[in-house]
Length: 432
Image (cartoon, rainbow, N blue to C red; front, side, top):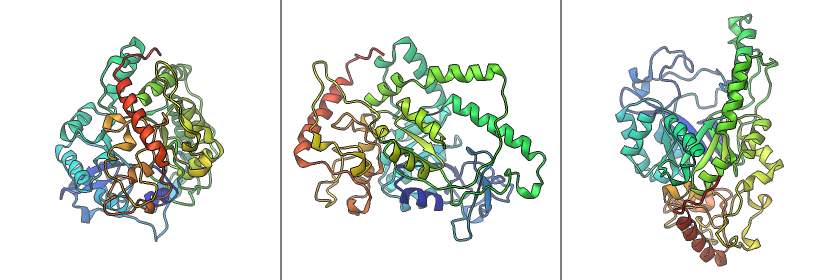
């Protein structure tokens, strides 16, 4: 929870987390089914009631930064939180949920919680397993859906056979790992493992005392995000060499999967693309240049600084075009990055900030969830859009930072453009 709170305070757009079910049927936020890695218990989560779950260790390795460890202070949250606790703490923040095990009761419980907290439109769920993802969709088709691994493969096949523009897609979020990044991560982990093989066990195998200065945690940050946790220290380990064939496979997979044409096509259909888990400026550049909507990162503060220096990535997609000419957009409706770190959007609170948030459901997730590309032809992916709908009957939208307000005289135009977009999406005119 301390990591989530810190990330959101910086402006992070979305939180990413994994869930399991305890013996007393509580939905707990945790990645592993077994508690050994993050606590001093060897039990599985399903074997214990929530009240029996042990505290988290004071030092934990950071999975996507080999050689670094997370070190919490005594004042930071040290328990695995309930999903309900996260929902209560962040009512206006989109949350990406990975259903870690194929458990019908777990899926039902998550669906019930999203309904109870009125956040079906703010929640993405699924898993790499197609069986789990299909079960999620069957349980609650109103929630935004991840592509399973099987569906990703089908997506790529449809792209290269030219069938993709004609195929219906019920998923709303494509979340994949860059093959080149995966290869680098594999090399770093091997290097750390080799170095740690001669390290005293008292050092926790962390390649030395290289501890971040503040908590890290699952935080998905979209292109208009501005947030995460600062870290310090590094593990001075050079990546080990890998066989030539492994490098060739990674390069080929990168070429086939990370395709700007694919990401652009999906964006026009209201489907967002996130690449994970990226923690370096080099990876940020590579991801956004490919046309991805956003990235998942352990360091939203690093991404915040990166986007401040590279505001061009805030406008990741070109304006939509009709068959005759480009739809004009008044200059005064285009907020600059310096003004508001957010895309223009018609799905926000009114200009008075009074919290008039009616009929804005699913604005953040595009047409597949009931919304559409916004009036400028740019994707809206921030927590501000989500805040415009979530619990706005109880909260003022002014409580959420950086809510984009669109001038009243452009709202009618935005509505017309959105209607044109919905009509055009049914015409198979994609050529790339």
